[in-house]
Image (cartoon, rainbow, N blue to C red):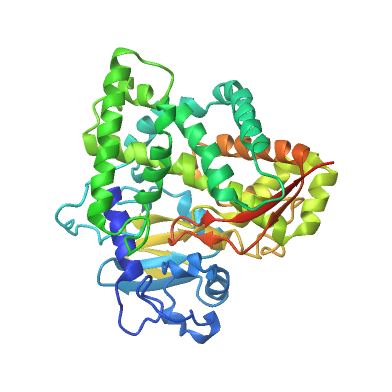
Length: 443
């Protein structure tokens, strides 16, 4: 089953009506979401995008952790799927690729063996594969974020960060997401791909539409629009690949073009892996950059503590990644009948590992809803995953966030969020689309 199949099926489940399930609709649902305590346990559908866009997911997952940590749903589109909400269950599945496969996709999709709707792009990515194919394709591009390469990139990341921060308006409201988070991560992506710098915002667009839910006035309005724009992405990168075959560099396109395990990828495999790298390098870091500002506004005592002791920045970065959890879940598929938490999982059932919930599990993290920049076990968070699929770019993300806050603390006394941010309409990407702030410079 393809990665694109997963993407589209998840989106349909966010919007398709399901009898007796008040949370089965996403964009079509009207009126306020009910309190988690007012919904019948079996009717809680964690993939409803409104839980995340309206920042209501915490209460629903807290109830599931307490009452039904291995939670079952079934819909006409996706079939049978289970939501894991406790830390230990999630980590156990994440590290067991032999029993729980990634080969059918990493987000909620169609039942195994179902035919794809006509016209759907049949993409695949190495993250949606099991060994040995996963291992060799991942190894081809892993060198781009090796410790040596990160050391070589640090000065450039800092220079660009300083340039962006020095240009920020002081004493007037601006959008942090657009001005800082998107700009910094898109510049980094352009560097990794050696992508034409003047076109770098195309990378942001392709990242946004990959997991966007089609809706009127949304990022995309139809699945066909997504298909058309992603094919434009493929065409652009095919041109880059042709150039790098003649003049190779040390960028991701060159690595895939010349790697013995990736040079003969089909167009859809090539596109799938490109989008994986684009989303991984864009959505996660940019949403944590925004989330760090929001979190320190929610917990001003922690910001005061950080300003008094900048040596806490690396620990703060790990804690914000836990607290934010930029990708809310990952999917696996059961290879055979198996038990999890006393529940009988059937072969080919989809399993959603809710990292966002596991990172708020009070069995592992004391007072988990609070940001604690000195939390001793912050680095044990689930946000990067565990096992063979652990996020390849985790150290690069941490490096970008560390440099951002080192430079922020040198320049600004306050970064004040002016209104509740607007959030991504998605149950997969736990992110921000707009966040107004005002900064004041240090005297």
